[in-house]
Length: 396
Image (cartoon, rainbow, N blue to C red; front, side, top):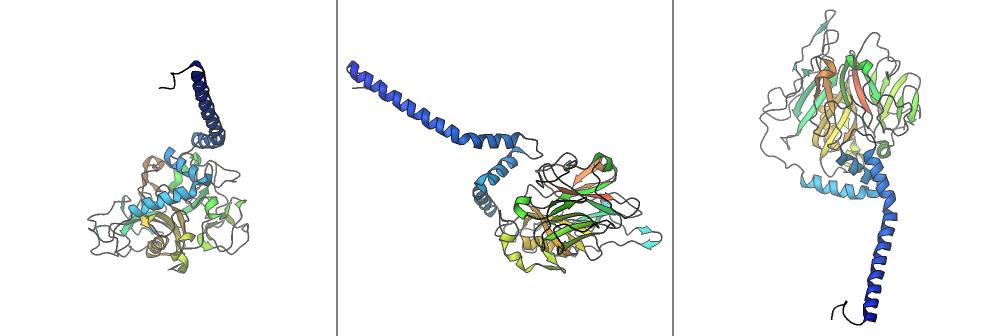
């Protein structure tokens, strides 16, 4: 006998049971909606606010920052372990071409201009152009201010390619710009992109370090202490006399008046031309993925002549990105952003921003990154004009 059959009283009882089940379901649904409303509001608010990032990256970052870091970490660890490179394998026949032409020594007032030596190959035979510095097409005072190259960085992994840039400190000035959301307390936040008034002299841009919540490093710019500087943290610092350096910070929470900018990101990974002995402890250099798996990593260092060196490569540990920077000539260096979304190195050749070229092949960021407002802080390299002094980073 079906539930609809039977006496009128039985049918009434069956109808009451159906109504009760419906009411229970509605109550459960109402409770779930009440519980999920803040979550849905938070997610919708996050993905609909202005951003330079694709929806997928914003969604993952939202999960990470809303008590889901364990989920993202485990998923990423599984993914990167699954896609970890195998040792050995066929060697590359060619390297990606970067730059526009081989760099020449140049001359200024009949004196020889310092140029870094070609990077010694780690695998043989050397591929055409491997480790040979190339100009990006711009000339300042008779020589190229920005040089780029590629080389194979690990004999055990012959298909890994490192992308490196060298910035002549006598012809360039470094600038630091807050992004739309990073660092969180920046004031003034500035243009969040390369300002239009400075684009005529723009030579290169590259990514900065970890988000503040991950590094808790200091951030100082144009006399404003956005986050206090921490002793022992690796710091890219630029001074009013035009010098730039990468140091282990030993000063106070706010630098002296001769500092224009200071950006910290974890301890030095290279000191005195040697890797930090603590690099084997992966938890120190990117807690998201640790050092157990290989991911895209980037870093910046200083050579013995005071020139900046930027490097990025895929399938790296903290130790191997340190080795790349050392091999390229860095005597001190810090790690910058890690994971495939973030490393960006863009150069601007003849025609300036109209000839923006990605040196680091980041498929998730365009060559126009930093020419529009970006979510995260970044560095810009300008051609030096007039006196060497750098009074402040230009915002207008």
